[in-house]
Image (cartoon, rainbow, N blue to C red; front, top):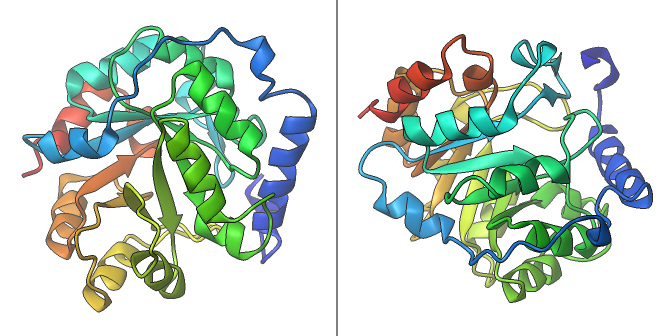
Length: 272
């Protein structure tokens, strides 16, 4: 699968697959029961965390690696989510994009029924249909990727989607990778709950953990809460990113592929 993802067409491929998922009914809200869930503020949860604020990811596949090792076997998503929370996770990120990520809205709905922890709906959002679905199944936060909107690959502007999400009671994590994107977001009048710096370039799928360090050394984040995403696997990296100015850390593959999820999360959670 990794050979498929090369060049600047990657973002368009991801966006097109989201539209395809919508057309196929993956986000049809009539399929899902509405959760009577009062939103949990993910920003406050991060600020209140006494140790390392971790957003740990429930994922089965990634575009760059394909099906992950643990997911080759029978996988109990609820059991994994509960293990993550008991080990110290501040919030969960649940993949809901069917293509390339093997995610589903049902995964999020199932986890929501069992946990009282903030849940980020991790998806390539291109339509407000996905936002409506996120709210109905009990998500607390959605991901909006700046480069998707800069490339005019969604049905509206990032500001429009952010406002719509907030009216629905959802927090917003806006994700950037480049210097231009970071400058644009921190200078925006739009008040985003969280800014995510993705250490993975979505055009090449190459990962450089120093991306977070580089952006935060060049630009003042102000009062923004910054989440460093991708490529994080050790306490040493957590400490480096914390010194650089990151406030929280989204960790996926290194945890889900660990032979002992509980121990891996605790190792990261007590990094400082």
